[in-house]
Structures are given as structure tokens and as C-alpha cells.
Image (cartoon, rainbow, N blue to C red; front, side, top):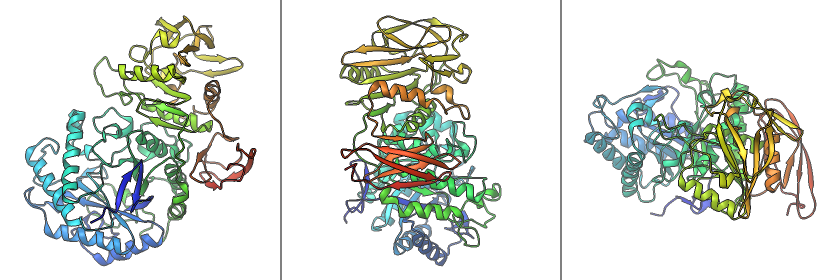
Amino acid sequence: MSRTFTVEDGRLLRHGIPHVVIGATYYPAQAGCRLWVDWDPAVLKDDFHRMAAAGLNTVRLFLFWRDAQPDGGECVSETTLDRLRAAVELAGLAGLTAVVSLFTIWMNGQLLDLPWRRGRDIWRDPDMLAAERNLARAVAETLRDQPGMLAYDLGDELWHIDPDSARSLTRAEVAGWQGTLAGVIRAASPGALVFQANDPSGVFAGRPYGSDNSQELDLVATHGFCDWAPVPIASTSSYEATNLVPFLVRASAAYGVPFVDELGSYGVAERTAARYLGAAAASALGNGAAGLVVWSWRDVSSTAEPYLDRPSERQTGLLRLDGSDRPAMTAVARVARARTALTPSRRPAQTTVYLPQRVRGQGSSYLDSGGSTIATFYAYLLLKRIHVRFDFTAQAPVGRSLIVCPSVAHLTLADLDRLRSAVADGATLYLSLGDHLHAFPGADLCGAEIVDTCVPVGKELLRWDGDTWPIDWTATRTRATELATTSAQTLARYQDGTPALTSNSYGAGRVLFTNAPIEAQLGRDGRVTGWERWYDRIAGLAGSPRPVRCSSPDVEVIALDEGMLLVNHAASAVRAVVTVAGPGGPALHVVHLDGKDWTVLPETKEQR
């Protein structure tokens, strides 16, 4: 049987053609999480056809582990397997592909646990591991001939089943566990795609699981809810809120093909939820997501687990309980109609954000200062606000004009070798310091040395020519330091007159270094505004290509395969003037966007 879905050259393909997933997590309105027990295929059939009619092309199904192996790990319920197969067949008949999430215990903050597990470790206990192999094999064999099977998810945020045990795993153990089960699935269903979805801790936190440890998987899957973000987000309508999931996509793309397995919002008015979902979804696709699955399809009336304890989880649907559309359904349908047009350009970016090997921290001793992923989020925002085209890389940053290392907390020898080589070959490295002990790149590279640590009195303000910016040292773990130049030129100073930003030639390139944790100290509500001027000056020194200029920093501009995507991440309406350089001369666009609105500008003849 030929493989329907493949991942090639960084893209998800269906029969060799680029494919963009737009789907929803599914529960029947009455049965909820008991869909495999209170089985009603007629309801599934009707719902799946309505999903397809709304423009969606994928349904995500949770296989609750206790329904699949109710009596122990030696066998798998044939009844549940038959129902799972029927559900995937019904989805296919409606024109939908299916994502099946295995090993579902953790759901809505509760454990829908196996009665026979009795607290045993799902990653290390031999009997549990055998049960997992049995279930993975049985499901893959059951669905192997289903052309609409898109991918298998090994488990929904399954690290929350036993957080203490999960944190004690090594990276090798995580990769081994994922590789073993992925291998079982692929052996039973050759060519099957496998991923394992994580909440934002898989990008932000120093855990053994996550985007940077997904080499055994086909897609790098992430969830994004601004209500539980590890960065300060004031509201669902805030600028940062609709940038969170696109950031997770960009960061995950440094390690593989990104896929948004859950996207939604909680506790806000329907119009607020719709505006959020439309902007975040369009931006996520424009930033390279292979697809996204909305949480969730329809409201639920069930009072069984997990809704008995968390009844608000019953009101997260694109459809209300009575079947009427919420405004969010209109927003998602609009993104679905435009999904092929939202494919980002594959032209190489000259600017990159370098992700060091310890960017997530991955250490808990007194010697470790933590990671720099939160700073990386703010670097992402600032680069977006100056409309520089960029990507993220965890590999050697070869052939780039500007390399950004924001508030970096730890550099390994391999990191230093990569950065030195890139600068020697002509790149400009901008590096802000997050930890003077583990991330200072060396006096030869910076043309400056750290004299000593100090109290930050006199270092609360940066001055670069006529521009000034405040520094909040209390917002970071970074210790203030005194910097003295050796061969570097001083570009910016603190109000006490000491160097704050230096420029040093190294080989064919140069290093722009600041001992201020610029990005890390932005981790408080509303502080990002104004700092785009700092990044604008950094990009100007590096000579970063700027073919697109936009008058509004809140409007994201993304180069697509054809045209440009503009997303207004602000809550209020904007009038944006966009100037696009081209061989035929500059093209001027005046665009009016409501709060959280987006549009695609077609390619003009001047750009061709």
C-alpha cells in the first residue's frame, strides 16, 4: 500500500503534494470522553460531515487507554478497536483525515487512569512498557489500511501522568521510549507518521522531553493556550497572546516539522475567542506550521469525568451545544479557506535566532542558571516588530548576515565553535548576556572583558546616541557586571558612563555585545513596546535585508510563496503603510486591519 502522508524537505505531503491540516479535537456532545463506551456511530457520521462542510479536513480522536485495555496490558479490547476503526472510516467517508492520540490518561487536568496501573511508571515499568507495545501494535494493525490515517500521537501531554517520574527521565530515556513505540507503530503500519504533543513546557522548560528531543518522531507537535503560558500575557486580546503559538511553531521548526496539536482559549467572550483564534491560527500557518487542530469541535453536555470536576471544559467548542456556530467557527473556516495561500516562502532567511544547546536550561544544580527560552520569545517579538525576515536554528548558523543570541544563559564549547566560525566567515553576531559565568563568549570575540560583578546602580538606563531605554535588572536572574573594552568600540553606555554595547571586528565579521539582559528583562506585561528601536539599530548595523517596511510594529509581515500575510496582533484597529522593494521599484500598500485581523496581499508586478 502506498504511503498517503509523508514528511519531506520540511513539509507535510499528501500523495506528494504539500498538505496543510486544519482540524478539531472531537468528542460527541452527549458522550464526551465516553465516546468509545457510549458508542453512537450515527452521531459521529453527522458531526464529521458537518466538520468537512465547515472547511476542516482533519479530526483528532482520543483513545482513552482504560477503554482500550480495561482488564490489563496483555490484551486489547476488540470492541474498542472495532469502534476506533469505524470512527476513522466514518471520518474518511466524510472527507476527513484522522489523528489518533494513544495512551490517553491525562485529560483536562485529571487522570482517567487505568484501574490496573496502580501507580506504576509508564516509562520504566516492564509490564507497562509491554502493555504499551501491545496497544500501539494493535491500533496500528487495525488502522493500517485506512488511507485517511494522518498520524499517531503517542500521548496527550502524557508527562503530566506522573510529573516527578517524567522529570527524572534522561533525554536518552525519552528518545528511547518514543523511538520504541514509533518503531512498533511503523512496523505494524509501514510509513505511518508519529508524533508526541507537549504543552509549552516542551519548548520553554528544562525538561527531558520536548521539541529539542524529538529526533525519533516525524512531526514536532506543540500545544498553545495563552492562559497557561510561561511568559506574562495580560489578556487573550494582548499583543503577546496571539504571538505565543506562532513562536512555538518557529522554535519547534529548528528541530523538525512543527504541528500545532491544540489551539484555543478559555474564559473569554465569544468574540474575543474568535479574534484570538483567527489571528493565532493564520500566524501559526504563516510561520510554518504543517497544520493545526483547534480545541475543540463542539460543546459537551456529559457530566462524567473529567467534566464533573471541571465543568467549564464543556464549553470550548466551535459549535454550541445546540449545534449553532460560535464566531470562532467563522474565524477558523476563514483560515481553512486560505490555508494553501498561507504557505510561507522557502527562501533562506539572512537573519537567524540561534538556539544554544542548553537553551532550555536542562540543569537543576546550584551551578545552573536556567535557560533562555523566555528571552528568545521576546527576541522573536522584537524581530517581528521590525519586520526582518528570520528563522530559528539549532545548527551551525552558516551563511547568515545576522545571528541573534538573546540573553543567553549557557554556551557550550560546540556553541562557541559554531558562533566563532560564523563570525569569522562574515556574519554579525548580536549577543546579549544572561549569565556572565556560563555565557560570556570570551574577550577575543567580544573585544571586551568583564571586570567584576556589581550592583546595578547607575546601570538602569541605556543610552545609544539620542535613544534611551530603561533596564529592569530585578526582572531577571542576571547579575550586573562592569564591562571594559580591549579592542572593541563602545556604541552605547549606561548612565554611569560604562560600556553597555560594544562592536568588535573578528575575522570577516563582527560581534555586537551587551552585558545587559535586554530580552530577559522584558518579561513583564507591556514592556516590549519601544524596544524594537534597539533591534532596528542592531539590524541596521548588520546590514540585514529589509525588503519590506511597515509603519505599525504590531502588524506582523510574513513573506508567503505568493504574496504577503499581514496579521494585526494588537487589540485595536490599525492603518498600516507597507512598502515593498522590488526590481520594478517599491510598491506601496495602505492596509486597514481591525484588532486581531489578518489579510493576504497578492504579489505585485514590482515584486516579481
